[in-house]
Length: 328
Length: 227
Image 1: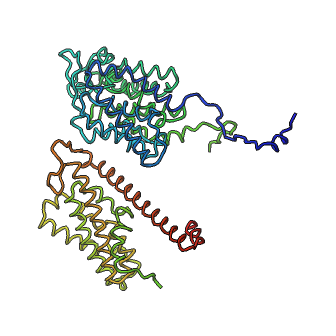
Image 2: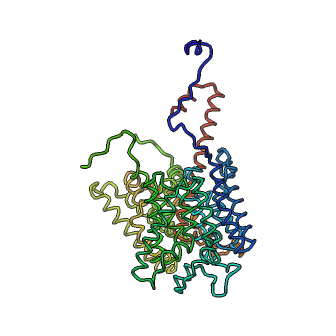
Image 3: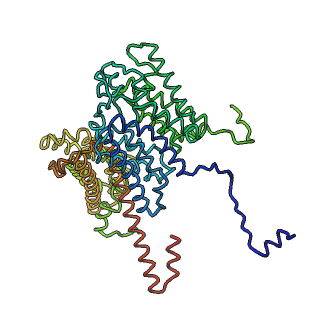
């Protein structure tokens, strides 16, 4: 038998020295991204059913421009071009699903370019962005084209009593409560992907089951929403909508399942995720009830995105084997 | 002995190398606030330039009799005098512009470009150089504001100096005339300027290396790398 020393003299032995972790979960970035894209399929289907086939053009425009911008910027910066990893496609898809039906295609393209360019690549590409890129694109469009982006179309199977306004706007300005079954199914006015709570839940639960989305963020958001809006509802049920309405209306569930759970822009610790989710719903309740806009999921997630580094720092778990710090 | 700088450099450094907005990032408050249109940017730039030039001239003339302990207060009083002149002239001659610029004309008093040039340059140099420096800095400030205002006006309201230049089909991006648009435009502009400057530096470096190689002085290349 040869000793190690003998082996070493024969051939140069390379030891692959790396620090922990040594286990790989088996999830590559592209696999995760394509799974999330797949989870959005029910929402896309719902959008096409309720708002017509034209919407596929919005989705395609957003995806093509997002992927194209990513490839272009990576080409200019002489980085590895990673347009097939699905992350840019996912950003485009998420952006498209937050846009109103029949939105202009040129504005969609602008939103995609801004989402990838200003939201992601300017920070250094995937993994470095502070804010959710799709929401950055959406926020830019909201500020650039405030009229078009709040022009809602009636869904295809709308009964006459349903106006083309979103349920939240209808409540905010006319005190009209849309019934929960329409909200759950998605037969109401609103952005492409957000109206059908059912489709969003199917995709979201799929992501939780396969382990891509950590259940703590959506669950803490829903609990927080129930609690914070419940307080107002108990104070005055006439003036403030019920928690159930608040959860099903607007893009709350879509944001909770797909936007807030973005791996890059959400906290990494379990405790942090609870703080993050509760914070989003608190900001959201404040915007919906006291703000001038009927909906504020986008802003509340972006605001809490900015707090993520701080949350991570303060919820850092004790290092294994380290002593507890003594309180002064 | 002070390093001698040529007079043209004294003027040009403010326009590009030390551009107050694009390189020194001074005076950003009016830069971000008033540049919703090209005309606003130009007016703001010219008003600040006038104050800067007059204050620099006066201060470098009397620089030896200003007691160092109260120099900042003296600078502010002198600057404020010229700002008052600008403010009153604009109110009398260009009331619309004066209204558009609002409180930002009186606020030129505390513009750090102007105070910074007095402290860093005018109080240490003779009036001739101070004048060139002030003109250069003022020109740099005006150009930056004009570019920023121009970009924001073209995209945000389809016009340039009030003339429509974008087609009707072009949907104006309202964000560009909102404060957010100022930050985005300035950030992208700074990024572009930095990319250009880096590239220029790299090209100069490469040509210098090539030159040293040609004349056979490889040891100088190493010195360059150390730097």
